[in-house]
Image 1: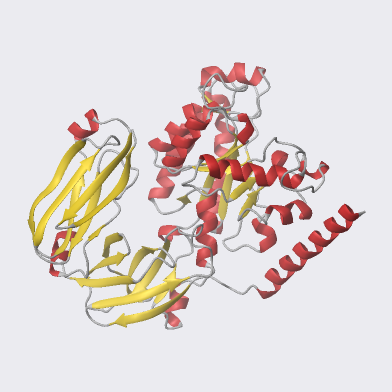
Image 2 (image 1 turned 135 degrees about the horizontal axis):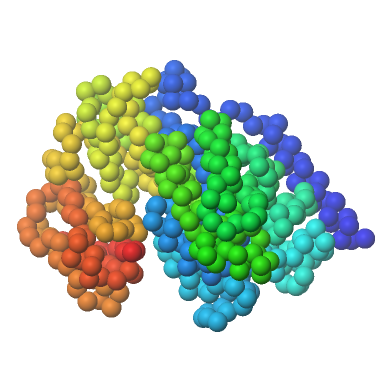
Length: 491
């Protein structure tokens, strides 16, 4: 009786929160034009990089094929995917359990930027379980909480914030319990997720499941399903919403008949998935769709719908402002793509926030002259400086307030990456690269520098051929000042 009363209470609380969320929600996103008409100087783009829509790849269960087949295809097109695992089924080495992968496999994937999410502990039918508690096996709370904890222990540098319901089964009670530990949860369905979500919708994300007709003896046999998902994404782009693809195993075409005979659920072939990814890359390059993990799209939407800003300085030579949100900074640290209105005389802008630095093009839209910058809420003061010509080397005219070493970009990288640093006065500068054992790999700078902001490039064909994938460190020395940062080479 106590358990029943507890379940009713939790459902009432969740329904109340959902109702309040729906009732109080107003239009939290306005177009740049509307913001300009309201006199705004700073406003967030609907989707990252001002793309038209959002899309996420998701794969369930934590199979070896995710590492061996999905990972290299996604990496080839510079996409990041979401992989939902059941922690007890991953081993430390092969042979493992059934066709499930190993922890080292998914640790590598996490380092590369793929999301490792929770698929509960044992893939049980959650609606059939008691609520229980976080330490009692075979209960809802144990299944959803312990999976998250084990993932966070094994992947301490990546917060587990999303869950995929086993068998896509959930109800209001399960949603309310899931919301205690996660920021969003994925179910299934052919419809799109809107660009702003209520509390209830965050824990019922829709994901399309591709159902293949047999026989499947060649790629030609799966072309109808390829057309289906391409049409679905095209509709997503028109709606400017967020779509999620639900997948399981991915294997070479010649392995597909054997896997189907073994009872695998709707596997993709490598060839089919490669064609889809290549098609999607063209859509991404045309700014039709932003491809990102479920966790990062979750972060972006919640940050975009919560942020506020305050202008500190705004004149003909520089703009400084702060941007904040009321969210947990340990979780919500994804950059917002933000439009900033700049004076009419600006042609280019140098942007600095914390450890990041960018050179931005100024362009004209309905709002006037603007730049589009990626900014992390609560990431420190954002500074924009007027530049008259392109090229970060011209930023040496700007005198930095302090010595800084910025995070390399891109990171992970292949085959090269840019490293930027700032010197506040004329001094001797050393910038070197080391491997994980501390052995020096390259000297990038070793000379006297005047005050300014500089950029060097690490990586070329020779280095790329000789260095293995892995973690490397770059270290800046300026007088007694020493700072080291980590970067990742992937091949």
